Length: 279
Image 1 (cartoon, rainbow, N blue to C red):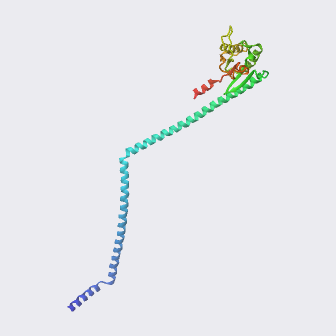
Image 2: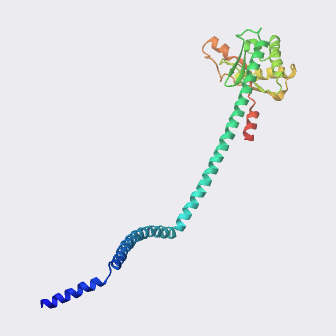
Image 3: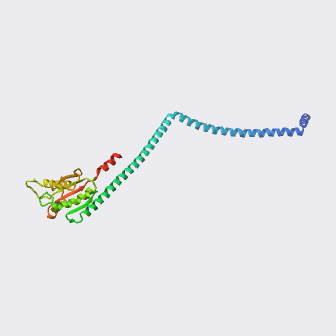
C-alpha cells in the first residue's frame, strides 16, 4: 500500500507543479478581490438595511400624520377657519375700541374745553360784578361761584322795605349796575329767586311768605326788563318762601341772611347738549 500512496502523492505534487506560480498569484489576487468586494457589498447591504429601517420608521410616522390629517381635515380646517374669523373679529374689535377711545378722548377734551370756557366766563363775570358793585356794602351783597354757577345774593334791606315787595330807589341803582354787566353778555340767562325767613306775613296783597318771595322776585325782573332793557326771555322769576334757608331762623342774624334775593347765572347747558348730540 505504501507504494500506492507514494504514487498518489507524487501525482498530486506533479499536478500542483503544473500550475505556474504566476497564475496562482493571479488567482489568489482575484480571490482576495472577490472577498473584498463581498465585504463591501455586505457593508453596503447592512447600511441599506439600516437606511431602509429608518426610512420605514419615518414612512410610518409620515403615513400616520397624513392619515390623521385626512381623518381630521374638516375639523382642522373648521378650527382654523374659526380662528381666522375670531382673529378678524378681535382685530376689528380692537380697532373699534381704539377709535372709541380716540373719540371719547376728543369728546372729553371738548367738554373740558367747554368747561374751561365757562369757568373763565364765570371768573370774568364775578370780577366785573365785584368791580361794578365795589361801593356797595359787602354785608348787603355777596357774589360767589359754587360748582361752576355764579350766585349774586342781595339782602332784602338793600332792595325792599320790611314786609314790602316794591324795590326802593337806591336799590334800583344797584340793580342797574348788575344789569350793565349782564347786558355785556346777551346770551347768558339767569334766574331771580325770592327768599324769606320763617316769620309769617299776611296782608291785603299777600297771603303768606310764598306770595312775598315770588312778588319780590318779579319786582326785580320787571325793573331789569323795563328800566335796563334786559330781554325778558333771558330771565326767570321764582319764589322759595322760607324753605331754602342759608342760616338758622332761631336768631335775628340768621333770619336776616335768609331774607334775600338771589340772582343765579344759569349754566349754558345747550352748549353741552350740542356736544352730546354731536358725539
